[in-house]
Image (cartoon, rainbow, N blue to C red; front, top):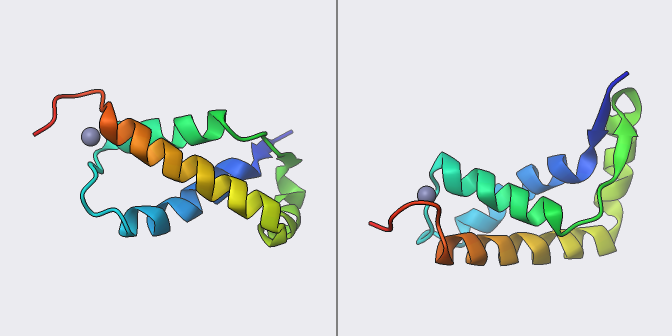
Amino acid sequence: MKIVNIVEKMILDAMDEVLEHKPQICKCDKCLSDIVAYALNRLPPRYVASEKGNTLAKAAYLEKSIQVALLVALTEAVEQINANPRHDKE
Ligand SMILES: [Zn+2]
């Protein structure tokens, strides 16, 4: 049995786009992991059995409310982690 949280997949997909508009922020592994974790903790998970994951993920992508919540959480995460990185700023 394999269960996946499709919100996680959606965050990873949306992240590239969000970061593209924020060239000034640190994109090291630590910060990127923190950003994903922060955003995921602020969004209700949507678990699906992986064999049905593709179909359900597509349906979720079309739900405007999820997309909006996702971008808000992600933007907040980027700002939060950028302000308090787990390492010294350069
Ligand atoms: Zn960093």
